[in-house]
Image 1 (cartoon, rainbow, N blue to C red):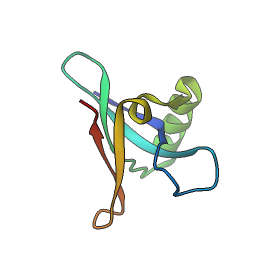
Image 2 (cartoon, rainbow, N blue to C red):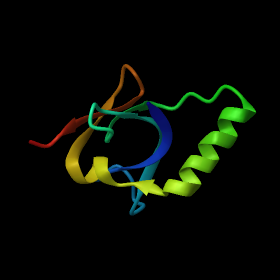
Image 3 (cartoon, rainbow, N blue to C red):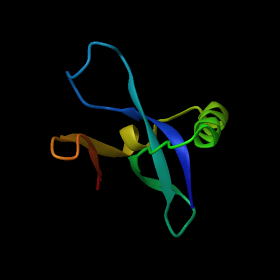
Image 4 (cartoon, rainbow, N blue to C red):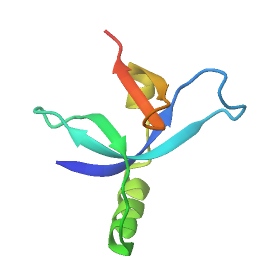
Length: 85
């Protein structure tokens, strides 16, 4: 199962703003927790409406920034994330 989400990106010294976020597709693990993500793909107005509704309902997800480390993947032009152990 997956849903759209807006995650807070924690990457030191990259932006002057206090907070940077990305719209992603969040994926559940076997326990039903959203513990992975990928770049969002929005291909229709219906998907755009679903994304807006889900993010408006859930707000900004800070779990990834609180529990892992982001790095920029130049090849994919998107974020990699590794959970802190």
